[in-house]
Length: 257
Ligand code: NAD
Image (cartoon, rainbow, N blue to C red; front, side):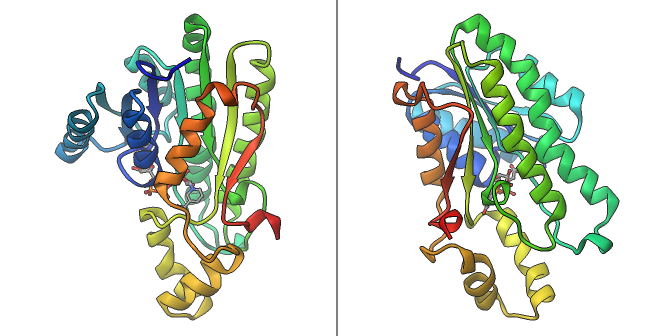
């Protein structure tokens, strides 16, 4: 079955990996719902630009993924959800005993709990349509850990667990649920971690990139948003119909170490 004409909702998709996935799916003929918590002219211009370039229908719907009711409202407002990509995410880096409670709560809400709410709202639509794909953007940190990232690692391990449960609850239906686990991808989220990490390790920018970030990525290359878009598109294909409840690493060998 072609993905052409299907509708994908991608949370946190006005930048980085979410945007890369949205663009790749749009190029394959999928109608797109972009999302973030902002509601700026640029957000709507982005939707127009992708629509113009690809010929598919692209809407931007503002919703704050830290709020359960807004997560559910995003799906309801979209009105249709064949492909749900739970991508919105934030990061904060600090040792556990200094980790601010409000940052912990925000990371768990945006990186994990939002996916529970969007999935709960989207599954009835997928069942009605008789087809569905849930794609959760976890991380190499959904399978391994690093110091100073307690909330992020906990949320990402959590979303891998949620993926497995979603897959089991939909196993007998034409719906799959999988998690993509990227290694480091140079996006605004990663850019924002560089100053903190420089301070923590007392290193310069290039040293942080080489010795800390890509230290565990044997390929010594960042993964790209296009590669993640291609992986998401593969998970939507017929070839992936029996792939469910699992993780796909796009991490240059990180988790093979
Ligand atoms: P990014 O900062 O470029 O994008 C994050 C997106 O989430 C943005 O669109 C932002 O607006 C949105 N967002 C943040 N808070 C939100 C909220 N409250 N409501 C709605 N949207 C919100 O970062 P990215 O690197 O593209 O990250 C995307 C996902 O990929 C995250 O879940 C991240 O954990 C994961 N990831 C990233 C990397 C990497 O190296 N960049 C690696 C592994 C996993």
